[in-house]
Image (cartoon, rainbow, N blue to C red; front, side, top):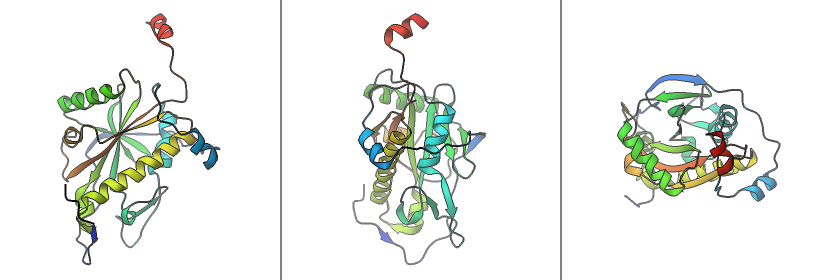
Length: 231
Protein backbone atom coordinates (compact mmCIF):
# COMPACT_ATOMS: atom_id res chain seq x y z
CA UNK A 1 0.00 0.00 0.00
CA UNK A 2 1.16 3.54 -0.80
CA UNK A 3 2.15 5.22 2.47
CA UNK A 4 2.74 8.72 1.09
CA UNK A 5 0.78 11.54 2.67
CA UNK A 6 -2.48 12.39 0.93
CA UNK A 7 -2.42 15.58 -1.15
CA UNK A 8 -5.60 17.52 -1.88
CA UNK A 9 -6.08 17.97 -5.63
CA UNK A 10 -6.10 21.55 -6.91
CA UNK A 11 -8.33 20.51 -9.82
CA UNK A 12 -11.25 18.19 -9.03
CA UNK A 13 -12.65 15.60 -11.40
CA UNK A 14 -16.33 15.00 -12.12
CA UNK A 15 -16.86 11.82 -10.11
CA UNK A 16 -20.24 11.66 -8.37
CA UNK A 17 -20.91 9.62 -5.23
CA UNK A 18 -22.08 6.12 -6.17
CA UNK A 19 -24.35 3.71 -4.34
CA UNK A 20 -23.79 0.00 -4.02
CA UNK A 21 -26.14 -2.01 -6.26
CA UNK A 22 -29.15 -3.06 -4.19
CA UNK A 23 -31.96 -5.50 -4.96
CA UNK A 24 -34.54 -3.90 -2.66
CA UNK A 25 -34.66 -1.67 0.40
CA UNK A 26 -36.38 -1.95 3.77
CA UNK A 27 -37.10 1.19 5.84
CA UNK A 28 -35.76 1.16 9.37
CA UNK A 29 -37.91 2.24 12.34
CA UNK A 30 -37.66 5.86 13.43
CA UNK A 31 -34.48 6.25 15.52
CA UNK A 32 -34.50 7.19 19.20
CA UNK A 33 -32.00 9.47 20.87
CA UNK A 34 -29.82 8.16 23.65
CA UNK A 35 -30.06 9.86 27.04
CA UNK A 36 -26.58 8.63 27.95
CA UNK A 37 -24.00 11.33 28.73
CA UNK A 38 -20.66 11.39 26.91
CA UNK A 39 -18.82 10.69 30.16
CA UNK A 40 -21.00 7.66 30.86
CA UNK A 41 -20.55 6.37 27.30
CA UNK A 42 -16.77 6.58 27.77
CA UNK A 43 -16.92 4.75 31.09
CA UNK A 44 -19.18 1.99 29.69
CA UNK A 45 -17.21 1.43 26.46
CA UNK A 46 -15.58 -2.01 26.35
CA UNK A 47 -14.75 -4.61 23.70
CA UNK A 48 -17.68 -6.95 24.21
CA UNK A 49 -17.36 -10.72 24.66
CA UNK A 50 -21.06 -11.70 24.74
CA UNK A 51 -23.64 -10.88 22.08
CA UNK A 52 -27.20 -11.54 20.98
CA UNK A 53 -28.75 -10.48 17.67
CA UNK A 54 -29.60 -6.74 17.47
CA UNK A 55 -33.18 -5.81 16.62
CA UNK A 56 -34.19 -3.50 13.78
CA UNK A 57 -34.94 -0.82 16.36
CA UNK A 58 -31.42 -1.12 17.83
CA UNK A 59 -29.86 -1.08 14.35
CA UNK A 60 -31.90 2.03 13.53
CA UNK A 61 -30.58 3.92 16.57
CA UNK A 62 -27.00 2.77 15.99
CA UNK A 63 -26.85 3.43 12.23
CA UNK A 64 -28.52 6.83 12.49
CA UNK A 65 -25.99 8.05 15.07
CA UNK A 66 -23.02 6.52 13.21
CA UNK A 67 -23.80 7.44 9.58
CA UNK A 68 -26.99 9.50 9.47
CA UNK A 69 -26.81 12.57 7.21
CA UNK A 70 -27.35 16.01 8.74
CA UNK A 71 -27.21 17.90 5.44
CA UNK A 72 -25.57 17.83 2.01
CA UNK A 73 -23.33 20.60 0.66
CA UNK A 74 -25.28 22.43 -2.05
CA UNK A 75 -22.11 23.38 -3.93
CA UNK A 76 -20.66 19.85 -3.94
CA UNK A 77 -23.17 17.08 -3.27
CA UNK A 78 -20.36 14.59 -2.65
CA UNK A 79 -19.72 16.36 0.65
CA UNK A 80 -22.04 15.58 3.56
CA UNK A 81 -22.28 16.56 7.19
CA UNK A 82 -22.77 13.62 9.53
CA UNK A 83 -22.27 13.05 13.26
CA UNK A 84 -18.64 11.97 12.77
CA UNK A 85 -15.74 13.82 11.15
CA UNK A 86 -14.53 12.63 7.74
CA UNK A 87 -11.90 13.47 5.12
CA UNK A 88 -13.19 16.70 3.58
CA UNK A 89 -16.74 15.70 4.61
CA UNK A 90 -16.68 12.95 1.96
CA UNK A 91 -17.69 9.98 4.14
CA UNK A 92 -16.43 7.40 1.63
CA UNK A 93 -17.24 4.28 3.69
CA UNK A 94 -20.31 2.18 2.87
CA UNK A 95 -21.55 0.48 6.03
CA UNK A 96 -22.61 -3.15 5.51
CA UNK A 97 -24.55 -5.25 8.02
CA UNK A 98 -24.87 -9.04 8.07
CA UNK A 99 -27.43 -11.02 10.05
CA UNK A 100 -28.37 -14.62 9.20
CA UNK A 101 -32.06 -13.73 8.93
CA UNK A 102 -31.45 -10.88 6.46
CA UNK A 103 -28.16 -11.65 4.71
CA UNK A 104 -25.85 -8.82 3.65
CA UNK A 105 -27.39 -5.33 3.62
CA UNK A 106 -26.01 -1.82 3.24
CA UNK A 107 -27.15 1.22 5.21
CA UNK A 108 -28.70 3.89 2.95
CA UNK A 109 -28.40 7.04 5.09
CA UNK A 110 -30.47 9.40 2.94
CA UNK A 111 -33.42 6.97 3.23
CA UNK A 112 -32.60 5.57 6.69
CA UNK A 113 -33.11 2.11 5.25
CA UNK A 114 -31.25 -1.13 4.62
CA UNK A 115 -30.58 -2.17 1.03
CA UNK A 116 -30.40 -5.86 0.17
CA UNK A 117 -27.17 -6.85 -1.60
CA UNK A 118 -26.38 -9.63 -4.06
CA UNK A 119 -23.15 -11.24 -2.89
CA UNK A 120 -20.72 -13.97 -3.84
CA UNK A 121 -21.84 -16.71 -1.44
CA UNK A 122 -18.44 -18.39 -1.40
CA UNK A 123 -16.72 -15.17 -0.35
CA UNK A 124 -19.49 -14.46 2.15
CA UNK A 125 -18.90 -17.81 3.84
CA UNK A 126 -15.12 -17.30 3.84
CA UNK A 127 -15.48 -13.88 5.45
CA UNK A 128 -17.98 -15.07 8.07
CA UNK A 129 -15.76 -18.05 8.88
CA UNK A 130 -12.89 -15.62 9.58
CA UNK A 131 -15.15 -13.61 11.89
CA UNK A 132 -16.10 -16.81 13.71
CA UNK A 133 -12.42 -17.52 14.32
CA UNK A 134 -12.27 -14.30 16.37
CA UNK A 135 -15.33 -15.12 18.47
CA UNK A 136 -16.99 -18.50 17.95
CA UNK A 137 -20.78 -18.51 18.22
CA UNK A 138 -20.92 -14.75 18.68
CA UNK A 139 -24.59 -14.22 17.61
CA UNK A 140 -23.74 -10.66 16.58
CA UNK A 141 -24.41 -8.60 13.50
CA UNK A 142 -21.25 -8.26 11.41
CA UNK A 143 -20.41 -4.66 10.46
CA UNK A 144 -18.18 -4.24 7.38
CA UNK A 145 -16.80 -0.96 6.03
CA UNK A 146 -16.13 -0.75 2.29
CA UNK A 147 -14.69 2.59 1.17
CA UNK A 148 -15.06 4.17 -2.27
CA UNK A 149 -11.57 4.58 -3.79
CA UNK A 150 -12.86 6.49 -6.82
CA UNK A 151 -14.56 9.09 -4.63
CA UNK A 152 -11.39 9.55 -2.57
CA UNK A 153 -9.14 9.74 -5.66
CA UNK A 154 -11.34 12.47 -7.11
CA UNK A 155 -10.19 14.74 -4.25
CA UNK A 156 -6.81 13.38 -3.10
CA UNK A 157 -3.59 11.95 -4.44
CA UNK A 158 -2.18 9.04 -2.37
CA UNK A 159 -5.64 8.57 -0.83
CA UNK A 160 -5.38 5.02 0.57
CA UNK A 161 -3.87 5.85 4.00
CA UNK A 162 -6.46 8.59 4.36
CA UNK A 163 -9.26 6.05 3.80
CA UNK A 164 -7.85 3.86 6.56
CA UNK A 165 -7.55 6.78 8.99
CA UNK A 166 -11.09 7.84 8.09
CA UNK A 167 -12.38 4.34 8.83
CA UNK A 168 -10.51 4.28 12.15
CA UNK A 169 -12.27 7.47 13.22
CA UNK A 170 -15.61 6.01 12.13
CA UNK A 171 -15.02 2.79 14.08
CA UNK A 172 -14.03 4.71 17.21
CA UNK A 173 -17.16 6.83 16.87
CA UNK A 174 -19.27 3.68 16.35
CA UNK A 175 -17.88 2.17 19.55
CA UNK A 176 -19.01 5.20 21.55
CA UNK A 177 -22.42 5.26 19.84
CA UNK A 178 -22.91 1.58 20.71
CA UNK A 179 -21.89 2.29 24.31
CA UNK A 180 -24.35 5.20 24.52
CA UNK A 181 -27.18 2.92 23.35
CA UNK A 182 -26.12 0.03 25.59
CA UNK A 183 -25.19 -2.21 22.64
CA UNK A 184 -22.23 -4.64 22.77
CA UNK A 185 -19.57 -3.75 20.17
CA UNK A 186 -16.21 -5.21 19.21
CA UNK A 187 -13.78 -3.94 16.54
CA UNK A 188 -12.06 -6.68 14.53
CA UNK A 189 -9.78 -4.49 12.41
CA UNK A 190 -9.23 -5.31 8.74
CA UNK A 191 -9.86 -9.06 8.95
CA UNK A 192 -10.56 -10.61 5.52
CA UNK A 193 -9.74 -7.49 3.50
CA UNK A 194 -9.28 -9.19 0.13
CA UNK A 195 -12.44 -11.29 0.58
CA UNK A 196 -14.61 -8.31 1.58
CA UNK A 197 -13.54 -6.34 -1.48
CA UNK A 198 -14.87 -9.14 -3.71
CA UNK A 199 -18.04 -9.75 -1.72
CA UNK A 200 -20.67 -7.71 -3.59
CA UNK A 201 -21.79 -8.44 -7.12
CA UNK A 202 -22.11 -5.70 -9.74
CA UNK A 203 -20.10 -2.90 -8.10
CA UNK A 204 -18.95 -0.33 -10.68
CA UNK A 205 -16.33 1.49 -8.62
CA UNK A 206 -13.21 0.43 -6.73
CA UNK A 207 -13.56 -0.58 -3.11
CA UNK A 208 -11.11 -0.78 -0.23
CA UNK A 209 -12.15 -2.87 2.77
CA UNK A 210 -11.41 -0.68 5.79
CA UNK A 211 -12.84 -2.42 8.85
CA UNK A 212 -14.92 -5.13 10.49
CA UNK A 213 -16.80 -5.11 13.78
CA UNK A 214 -19.47 -6.98 15.73
CA UNK A 215 -22.66 -5.37 17.06
CA UNK A 216 -25.05 -6.99 19.52
CA UNK A 217 -28.28 -6.32 21.37
CA UNK A 218 -28.81 -4.72 24.76
CA UNK A 219 -30.77 -7.86 25.67
CA UNK A 220 -28.23 -10.14 27.32
CA UNK A 221 -27.82 -13.50 25.52
CA UNK A 222 -29.23 -16.62 27.07
CA UNK A 223 -26.87 -18.89 29.00
CA UNK A 224 -25.71 -22.12 27.29
CA UNK A 225 -28.06 -24.08 29.56
CA UNK A 226 -30.99 -21.88 28.55
CA UNK A 227 -30.16 -22.23 24.85
CA UNK A 228 -30.00 -26.01 25.25
CA UNK A 229 -33.37 -26.02 26.97
CA UNK A 230 -34.90 -23.95 24.16
CA UNK A 231 -33.54 -26.31 21.50
